[in-house]
Length: 417
Image (cartoon, rainbow, N blue to C red; front, side, top):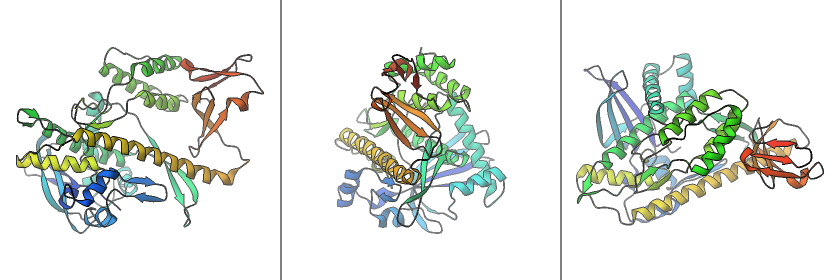
């Protein structure tokens, strides 16, 4: 119910398109230092669990006042782009606006319009989708890494008991929105990054992502070589190119899942900080979070600082780095909570299937045993070394992500069915 973002599009007389990315203007309602601001900062993020949302802001604000609901005038902060049909950006405008959205789509509805090329506002949607595809292509050409993610979604009955699990994949409709959000986030970070206050850069909460850890990377590349995948480790750009080449090569092959999962584990975690080292995974030199202020506190900070820069009235936020650290910590805690809640619901769901057999894949290996994930519902369970001890004495071979039996040489390796 918390709609953070909206897109607008119109044709201009000069043959270009004007495309607006409109974001809920939370900072209009939530002023620095107020009780609501302090509570939002403490939480720093909304937490989405299978059966409820623990919102960062009171629901009156997140679901009513700020939510960009259709057929209502709403305060927004906008990034408006003039774009030609080759997806080149000719002009950018940032500022506060009021919008009146005339339709709310679900991702599924838009996906259907993209696939059938027919439906409400189909011309606009297909055009936006074509531009998004161009942006995406350009991003990967410039060093972004194309990891795809899968999420688990639960169907719950009225008591909150899971009665179905589906695996949600990122489709073109998701990628359409994603590309325009990335564009807005990057544009805001580039604009603020170019402004100086008293001969210093303006303190700003960047969203940064470091290069992969060398040790993890070495371990991973030697494992990937078992599947004929080679890596060029000469530079950050070369590593990114190698990752993309690998992801392309293994598409649809049995080893795809294991190499994707292990590849993601070599990556650093993205965090908030005032030290801008760029975003490695996206291939951007400047990046921030601007597009979800209803559910993320750093976006509220970004809106406030952006407005100061536009007004040329800059008052640097004190202890911004400490606030960034707090937001990164809270984000990590929220993710761990979401993961634990999903696991709990999966266990609750699987209780009804005791004694039945499912196909699984070894999803993790440790000295004390291996994890198996069901292919159908992505539910994970553990087989301990103790469970295996009647067959053989199994030891972890780290370079091979495998448990190997000392006598039988029997192997349980990450990615095995």
